[in-house]
Image 1 (cartoon, helix red, strand yellow):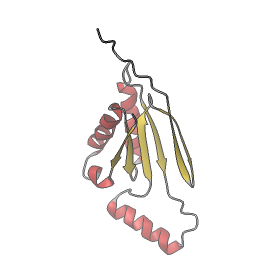
Image 2 (cartoon, helix red, strand yellow):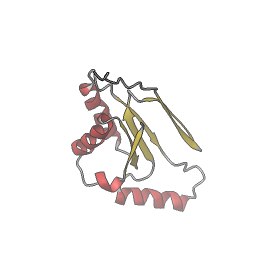
Image 3 (cartoon, one colour):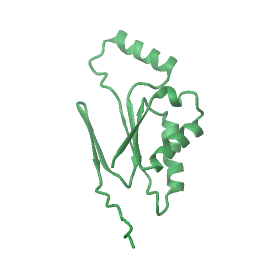
Image 4 (cartoon, helix red, strand yellow):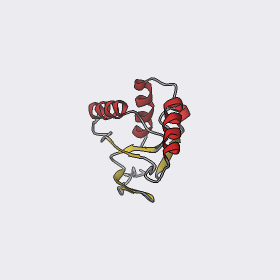
Length: 130
């Protein structure tokens, strides 16, 4: 079974960098795919990847990470300024971040109209009843 866990930006907004990363990584370690409203700062993404690399073992194979930004090409100047001001005041709520365990996610494809999340076929080993 594939589980997606939505985390609203407000749930991580008040946390410091290490607590944000720990919260997101713990969900991924439970073989759940995190759908985060907004995005992490570049430094936080780098730190998440660094910590993940340190924690790779036989059970945890790492993460796949992808960030989606809304198209701002056709925005008027006033709308761009307004969006930047809102992001400055409320945090990086623009966009969507997907973080999932590498053991489950095969590939994340994105284009302006859709997100394709390709997963691996995981065979569950069942114990034989005696």
